[in-house]
Image (tube, rainbow, N blue to C red):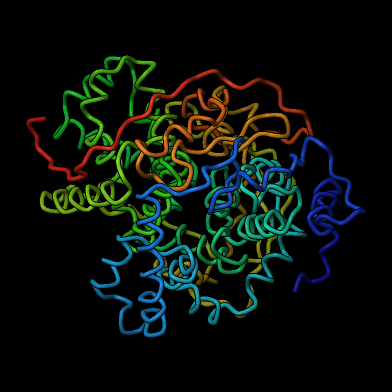
Length: 532
């Protein structure tokens, strides 16, 4: 209950206008500007994951792609049987082995949800998601920023292509609801792509609870990446540097020679588990592993990636290194997905043997400190949170809001992403900052990098159009695509929030960068040696 005070702290008229647009969706009464809605006459260039390409895809699959599809179809039956007897396999090694072989697309959403405990959470928290959706419509302070980021999230995917289409509506509901559910984080750039990935395989309520678990349980604990100061990011980058110094010191020395520190290239590796940094098929395989095994995948894969490409990296100059780490790896990883995952598993075993698989236990301040799912009464706030390139956050001029505890809520447990604590009434976390007060490097090209651009600009995906597969067979057709757009040349940066200034036409032209293919080696195995 809001005790009759709703009118005192409702969202602004601008926020309500944005909400009304998502409510109206694609109806004729909803005015959608041309720059917001790229042309849709591109169905013939949509791949199996919904990503849109500039040119027609090859009519026939390569031999390797065909083998992958056949193997996936064979595994679907096994997965369906396992799902029916989930209690028997839930914590088994057999389940883990199958996850690392790749979850079939047809059951990926179901399996992700079960691995994260979503079905049980929905029973325990029945009605909570709908309540948070309603609260967000009244009280979220992040509506404008969420709207801005949705307009550039996976726009090169058919599911998110239409402005105010069904998936954009779901993404808006999930992000706005979470912004009032977890008041320590609210909404931060980078969350839109994580939620968007979940929505590719889940409905909105399942995606909401999956996001909640990923943020706040101990296995994944993404909460520490998004709170002020980004303490978990710093901790993982320091551990990454430690691994490089111990096992591949020559490469670390070369990177440092050119001033390429881990803060430059690991941002999306850690914040988003390699989204937009490796081919999408490999991204899904990494997310399969990440969901079942947690943050060990971040440390192990970041090391594996550099170890696999060490020889090539040692020959590169500064510009080549930056382009390779930020652009080329997504277009062509150079190894089959199975080889990359096998190398990842080998790395995990080796690092575990030396107790270097994780940078230690998360300190308490990285974990949630405040209740979830409170009723929020925000007051006006001028507080801004910024993060400079050195990773330091700044807080200024903040006023706090108040919260009411819902009588039905239970005590908080940091291992349970969906419980709350009513012992104290925490103060509302202040509004996130504008880009004008953040770093000069635009995070919108990184954590919130548009997956495509608006009408008239090319769309990009990996060199391998269907899977990260045999480039000798498919690269000729793949390179009929346009070269990468200019947004790909911007370096990683750590900043938060872009001011909402209304619709503006994106300016710029595609880059003429040409990417040379890397032929996949025959062996994806990885051996860690300190003599490298």
